[in-house]
Length: 432
Image (tube, rainbow, N blue to C red; front, side, top):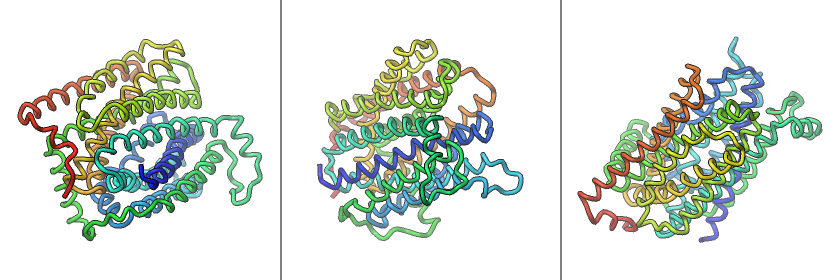
């Protein structure tokens, strides 16, 4: 791997570490402010909205300047979101509850993340040849998962009583005096982690890739995005990988919240302990990602699709699992299956997007689809909670949906290959 690749990895690690710790800190703040339970999935919902609403803009923005500079600017937006969360009491309008300020401030963090993503993934196709993309994605997914594990552990640690008491007892400069709760102290620490990520952003080398002058007219930007959207979905390989990653990210975001709720209702665990279970499933994703990076070449990426079906079936076993050692085994297994099938699919999608479009635009299309899936699935999950459905019912519906959808994708891919037996020869071709 080229030297700049590891700087990108470091920047991604610290930014993702802060993202995942902040999610738990924001949930803790909602609980502290007596926010209703159904507001928790809406927290993630508002975070994700920017990925969808700004999809037609962020691709052009990512290609308008060196990717490292884009990552620095967007990481700074995340820091602004942290500050808005801290100052929630001073930002209320009229009788608006403070917990809605938290949700809106978290949406600002989502704005930074939405603009960060095309640069983060797009730079890989600029820096590396196609044959290294699966390995690179194994690295980035493995490191991202490591940041998820450590992020949820960091978030859980920061909101725990013992850690918060230590943090609140410190008399540090530049820390506002009104910081007097565990979630607020946690957000301050997380803001400093974002600052570390920003320092690595500044050290990312310029790949030298330059694109045509990016359009600034919103209407033309939208039409250009629509063209990119149609192009990627019309490609027989792009559409399969896009369908899989779209399902994966929607399911993953919902599963993250399902695990927290399941830990609380079925296993009688507090939020900080539920965060540990999230970390356990993330360890599984890292294992699956690393194995896929080592044994699945790009040309054979579509052969991992059956693992998506298996993952949906295994998720249903959560309903019957209460013994903690088996809980750990189950969550690692689910995570490993997810990591094993999503890494090759992600690499294939990046490759086809780079061949057909450009780095930033293809990732923007990918983000749009994946985050529409997240919004829809989180909205449905929130409705189920609002209707007071039992968590076991929700888990069963979730597992059946994932397994059946992946079965349809497998049949779709088989039909594509029957129509074009030489389809896999397109994998690995380079853009001239």
